[in-house]
Image (cartoon, rainbow, N blue to C red; front, top):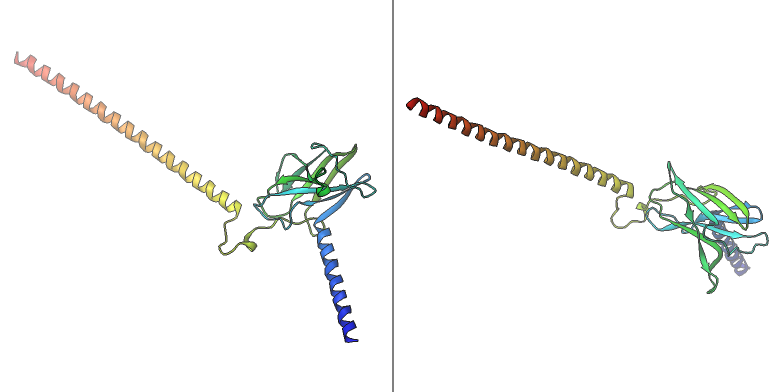
Amino acid sequence: MSKLRARGAIVATCSVLFNLLVAGVASAHVVKQAGPYSLEIGWQHEPTYVGEANGVQVIIHDADDQPITDLATDDLKVVVSTGDQQTGELTFEPGFDLEEGDGQFGQYNAPIMPTAPGDYTFHLTGAIHGEAVDITVTSSDETFETVRGTSEIQFPAKLPAVPDLVTRLDRMDARLASADDANAAADRALLVGGGLGLLGVVVGAAALLVARRAARGLGA
């Protein structure tokens, strides 16, 4: 009896773990419809971290759950935005090889590297076999993952975030520009001072020459 109970507990535990795994996978993408076509939209790689190469991923099936494998490069496009920033239109490339049978059929990826943490929005437009597509989705607990900073996985030293590096570089550029301006001003002052000094020498020499001539005239 105890063995049966133990087996039952193991089966129940495995079932729970399996359901959690499936739920985790499902939550990584959000499913949207465009006519008879279903589109699973999310990040190509998850968890999604700042500064790591990634991509917008869409997995497309028809009403019979058959993958769509013949989209042209410009059939679908996506604009990615976060905060008040947005990309231009990004195009999708197949994430599979029909001839070799590699990859997941129906999967397409648009490469991008997120450089700031936070929520991102994908705006997909175009057409699938003539069916118009105009879908906007934003990362959340119910759709796909928010972009994370990398501090939680860095070891042993914590590296500065990309925005911090940009800020530091901007400050360095400003300081260098100020130093260049100061050096340029000093060079100008030196040139002006040198010119005035030379002018003073010329004026003094001319005055001395005039004085000598005047003295000779008086002696004559």
